[in-house]
Length: 492
Image (cartoon, rainbow, N blue to C red; front, side, top):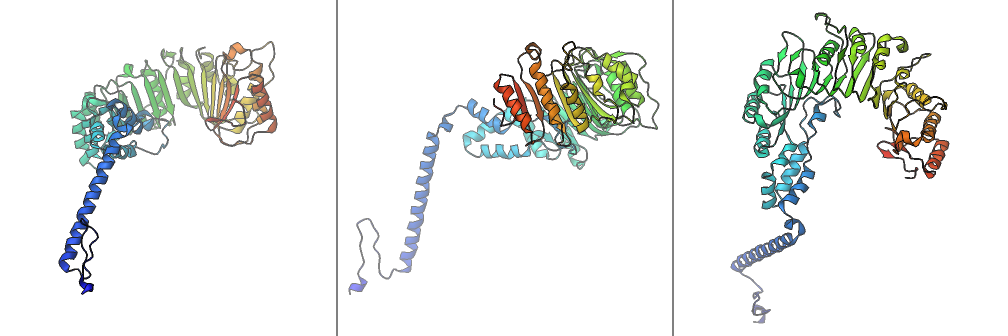
């Protein structure tokens, strides 16, 4: 009798039987599910309450937008498609695709964040609209509103995307301010580019010589041509920045003379002229670029175009010179009259010099002998130079100062070294530091004298370290940097 009695735990608790029926099992399972749903709902309410009380939810939209912009930094489109891009082999890589994923995560946090992300046009200017992903390109244009957008167009992509992105380009022509185009037909350039009324930066790549010049009606001020041997007809007087890469030397020289309003001109990896092409017309009298402040040219001092350029170019307001030693063909640079003429006409405004691929010919003076006569240089950069050349530079800079003569580069404030090998003459570097400490303070205008090398963990000799520490302790402002940061053993 007692074995069949129910056990009661309380007035609000269920009564369990020693032998529950199948119906009771079903009932118990349903009750458990309801309890679980109620607990989950309560948990969500608690979580929602805590979120609402969190300081991040009380921030005004303006502050949240600023925070979101750290996730979506502006895309550096000119660097992505310019001469200093990190990976020169990339043709039209999509800029920062991970940012779109981060933005999607932000939008999924809450309905408020989603609304803010979607309705903030400036966030969407961090992306590049391209024909790799047409759906994304449409989203970028639609959500960017009236903000300016960068566009990348690669004609290696399958043909179906060309017409679609071209249509999008026409619909949003007033939004495009930067454009990269790879191997688009000449007719496409003529049809679409004139409508881009706010275009500031244009990069064209992969155009071979042949036929008549390609006509491009554009008011852009920043033009980049890469692997282009053909000729273009542009609004030359409006171009202020011109970068050329893998371009024939005759085309480089022709563009240099036509773009009379240039502020910056850089020609890198210059190619020989096409042997089948008509002999170019070389300058025979001086030509002036009255506004040019930065000039870069890869020198082949035996080429007719290089000789003509060096002999006749005049740069009255030049501030930065990038001299690339491409090839000397065994020539003694110090005996070349066109090189002498070029340096003789450099202005006093020149304050920064970069030398690439500097070599020190055995038994001869290098091209640095010309630079050493420049009196207002404050910044010197040496990239991809041989150790012998760098050591010659430091030997010249660190030589004993004659009281009756002005030292080389008397206003020099910084030296940046990107050397191929770690075999620099540290004694000569130390002499250069010593020279900086002996300079009259008014020459450096109170700025520290810095030497920086791209190498990290250089094994500096004890004498150099000890003397630099003493210089700093005596109040001399000298700095030694490795890999973009100061050495940790030198007091600051």
